[in-house]
Length: 299
Image (cartoon, rainbow, N blue to C red; front, side, top):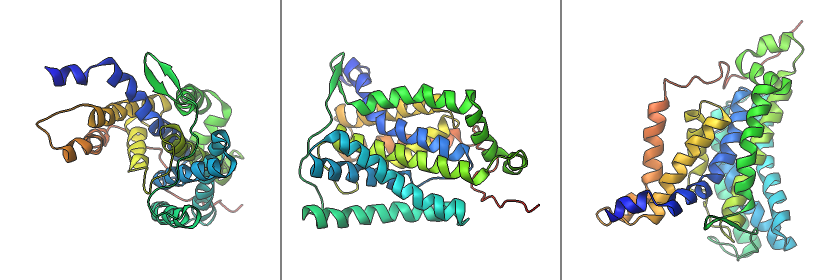
């Protein structure tokens, strides 16, 4: 009974939003990215580099708000690599994004050693200011994530710009015939995904925490991808899925289930991600031309 009381307690449910914040931000970015027809499994690396950039920016300026800008720039930098290599040079999107994840993991450890003389953890830095709602602690990144969901939905499904994004992901040749620059829209959407993944990293390192740990994203970029797919490439659906995964993470950290080993408890978010994603496969249809580089037809 005590375990059930913990599972459905108000503090646990409220904390789900805090744990879901980086997933929501990255999933919204991934939605723009994949709606335009580009696969981005590099969200993990962009989030990780954004987390490091946030701490570095805060460390050298003393201002966590400037650290947020560094995080956005860090995520955008890796997204720029993906955009140039995959959109402009037509390289394989999955291979390049996988390389970005590996590169970010190694680069952040190297930069930790160079700038902070540590291979595992940075010094503590000022964190973003917090506010409380019904006793639960949140930071501005959570508020931003909540606000971005309806904004992203409106842009994608109620504006001409969103229609163009969806058209280049579904039928790029038809969009091109109407004068829409397919690769320009894809390039922009990849950069958007990098910025939002970087902000997700800022939540981890200077919002929820106050330092950078090596590989601190811990697979959240992949969980965000699962939330995006489970949400059917819709920001509203991605929010619901992210809250579900955030709840599982809160359970793994906050609920004391004595008959389960701690290692299994910590794996709950990843196990549930696999289960939920397996159930979503076959029911969610991705953009028709996702993963396919576009070669402009010669007149």
